[in-house]
Image (tube, rainbow, N blue to C red; front, side, top):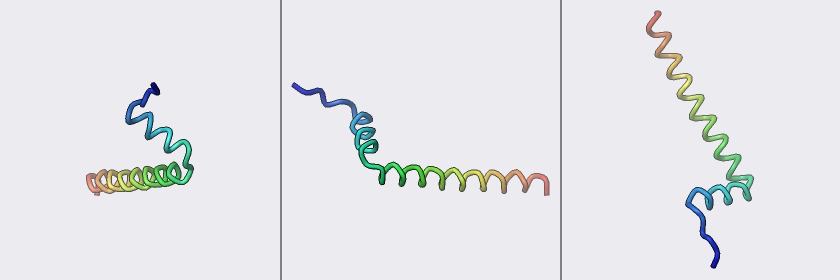
Length: 49
């Protein structure tokens, strides 16, 4: 009987075997981080101006 693994284990194996998915996840994460950073910066600058 083969162990199935957790949902995360299956997802991790899928991403590890497919570099295209890994690149898309990395770009998506970087894009969201940039949007959040720019929004926080705009809000902080609004406090001083």
